[in-house]
Image (cartoon, rainbow, N blue to C red):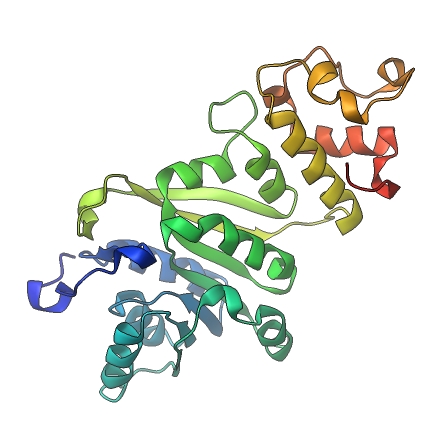
Length: 276
């Protein structure tokens, strides 16, 4: 559905990476995802004019809307006085990265909770790092992101978008790119398309000690993407290792799956070593 000009008109703050939806169909599809998982409570990151907020409340989901822009937080507060939806709304005028997600998750541990929102392109990676440590205690996260970012976290080995962020994300979540959102669905019209990704808790996740070492190794390997693993990972290799490893070191890093990185780190015995 295309929203009216009166509803969509609001000035952009470029410093916050703001773009606003002019159509509500992406939000409707996001809410359907949350409803399938019977979500009762949701944090909405950057509600902006409140399109997704109202759809969440209409679905009976209780929403904590965290908005850094005080203009939009005040406007949503005014609109909230007129809302008459099954769900309840709480508004917090704060930087999402400074919000204590662990405390909120602990308070909602007996309920089904989720994270959602049309997140700013310029802090997509930090939001991912903020969110993933607590994903195990949530039903899911449904995020609208820049298409390129969505492709990176959901990509497969041997593709152009596959990288260390992919490995980091996929060893901590089951992630998929649900659908694309064309740039024309936003105002002002950005230079890129968007996509909605869903992240769900991963069964049998590795220990944080292993995951941190995999992150270190994969980041180092991808910094020399075109080289063989024997060269890009030379700092981690010891004499005689090459004959006893689960993967061929003549391969390039972009062919190595997240699970193979885990096997490599374990076989090298790196999880108990200090960062290099």
